[in-house]
Image 1 (cartoon, rainbow, N blue to C red):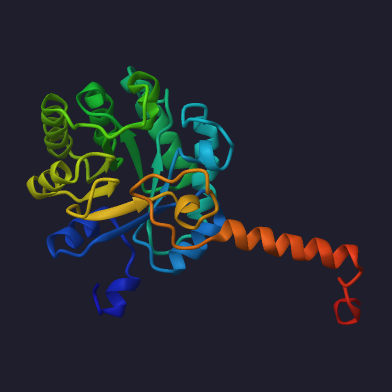
Image 2: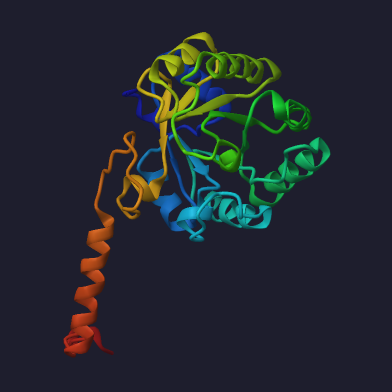
Length: 273
């Protein structure tokens, strides 16, 4: 961790992440979906905030990430950006806005940048979406890649199990990672793959590699905020570490409030005008 206070307060940019990798400083990344939470985690010093399509699950109650729309992602990203001073804000491009049509992909990315003021987009996939990524990069929009378990492809995989355990899939992942760097992606997320493979990718690439369920040999880590704060208790993968139990804390606070209202304890004399 840098001891330079000025450096820690400096705005995080895509080039600064590459600086951090070059000096061996780990990158801390979390998701956020609204102004209030984004403001809190930005003030705590988070490096990157991902406006994840996981909003489909934790904010909208969907089973997968697939239903969330471009309009909804822009709404969440716009809310997050208003609460952030330091972190780099990256917005997921939702399912159906970039696969198979590079012109639509560019139009979607431009909408995200213009309407939300996010600073980069994230896209799931490798060679299959190369044309879409290249078109977006040509417009000057930074792209973060995402390989391994790609939740938007859950119906193809049929499971959320660890990816790239077999040699053929591991080799494709390595080739895709090299390709994403070569065409100009500024960073890469690796989700739920063997730690040894993730370490190899991070060592071979010059761009930062952020892991989620990809071991400690990468350049940084990302978790879904609702999972690590214990707001969502229904999801307990091996890679998740809970840093709080807000589910219990919120439940107790609300129960206390209900009791105080029912017993006329709230409001008391000092809480009235």
